[in-house]
Amino acid sequence: MSADTDRIDSYAALVVHVGAHVQPGQEVLVSADVSHAPIARAVAEQAYAAGAARVLVEYHDPYVRRSALRHAPEAALTSSSRWELDRIDEWTTQGLAYIRLTGNPDPHVFDGIDPARTVLVSRELANRSREMMMSGQVQWTIVAAPNEGWATQVFGEPDLERLWEAVSVAMRLDAGGPEDVVEEWRRHRDRLGARARVLTDLGLDAVRYHGEGTDLTVGLIDDCVWTGGGLATSAGVAYMPNLPTEEVFTSPDRQRADGVIRTTRPLVLPGAGVLVEDLVVTFANGRIVDATASTGVEAVRAQLDSDEGARSLGEVSLVEGSSRVRAAGVTFHDTLFDENTGCHVAWGQGFPFCVPDGLSRSADELRALGLNFSAAHTDVVIGGPGVDVDGLTADGTVVPLVREDAWALPEA
Image 1 (cartoon, rainbow, N blue to C red):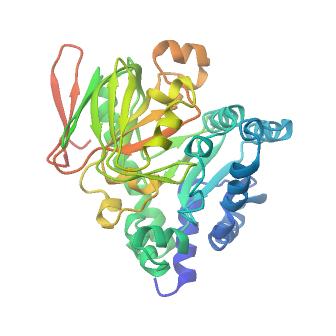
Image 2 (spheres, helix red, strand yellow; image 1 turned 90 degrees about the vertical axis):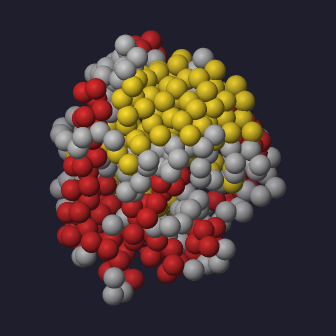
């Protein structure tokens, strides 16, 4: 782009028109770190230009969170106020558009804090937020906001321009002006959606990831729905929950996972900001029974012990070598980006929309079908060159899904 403002405007247009797909007359909530203000302002401008009735920007400060972790009683860190829950219910009823900006402004903000405290959250608040996003009434999207702190984590120096160059590749901002970027993302959305439909039609019983220290077989929920490219509200408004996205994914049967995974990308544990490298996780009968790493394993173990569902899988995904995020050539140290560099799995919360008629089923019905529930949802990358993925049918037929880092199924 010729100027920073042009690039940020294109970015904000993508967030508003493709990510959240803001509708005329709709209310919009933007959740952001204080360091994200330039992009939050641009998103607000684009949202109002798209016809939003009102845009609320809610800022958070990681240093305030650090103070809470250092001094607040555990009961305060794991509880929520009535008004916090009530407003989420109101947002759901209103059917607003929710935009969350990520991008860690200080990778060392929680240094010295007990890892067991960094993962403490209000389960009630986390569950209510999840219910809002899974209700089918709210368009929501999560997108990263480049900032100097994030650039320092990626490059070792606050080179914001270099970070923007990498983000521009990953986010297809090089497609041209705002309208060109939006149109390119709509084409990409359609490609992923077509792949998801092919996978759903296969009716697979399980998937197996194997290679580079990984050999994991995960059973799937009967008639599971694969998703890619985006979702739609119950009113039929299409939106994209994650920007960028290169994946097709589904939620597995939480009771069927056996084997071992070895990460092919470092993990920055969401919420805790802890860098986890060389992670190896072992599964038996659907549960994580062991986790080791060269750094950060204490925080991982603390999250795995945080609730009953944290040790079971909520997602399996496929990402192949044409990923634009991988083409950017950097490790972003942000799960939103790094999960799109290769196939990944996630322990924790599953997705009701990946179960047939899942949005109309009760939590007990979904659990009975095999869906996992947890306040956690942590994606770990296990794919890339040298890792193949097979689909397994109920009769044992092997269906190649990813071979030599390429999509192995016919394109629809």
